[in-house]
Length: 107
Ligand SMILES: [Zn+2]
Image 1 (cartoon, rainbow, N blue to C red):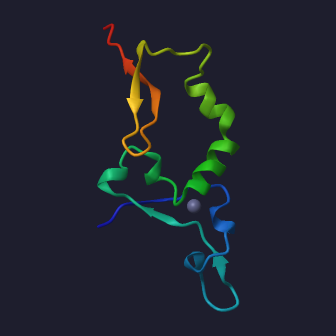
Image 2 (image 1 turned 30 degrees about the vertical axis):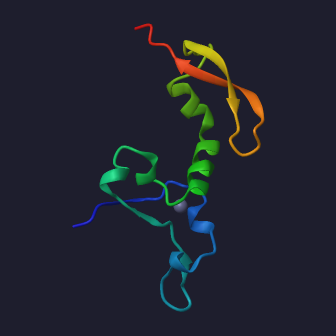
């Protein structure tokens, strides 16, 4: 038994592709694609969308509801340390300053 979801893309059934064609001559339709559930897609959007395009269509159509789930009202920050050290390119011999960003764990 295989588990699947119908693609949640609001326009999935309007894309002109052969794998969406269903029905018999005279009453053919373009049907929303099935998305097979895989172990690696469980609990991710890949289980509900056949493509990034369908995911984008869904997210853009429902952006107000999606934003309301976890609104970002202020910026987040990650503590870091910035160090600069000279780096010499072995091919050209040119020396430039290399910037290295390291995350600081203040926890
Ligand atoms: Zn789709």
